[in-house]
Length: 59
Image (cartoon, rainbow, N blue to C red):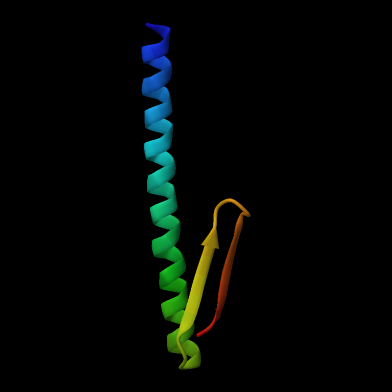
């Protein structure tokens, strides 16, 4: 029974993390679009969750 509860909590945490990562991806691309609108050139985005950084550079 304790294993079932642990598994349920782990699945919920993983689902929440995936939703948060998707939200970050969407927001970063919104910023890249805004930068393109402002500067007139497209931007490339790289998000690294392992290294904990976001990079945005000219394409």
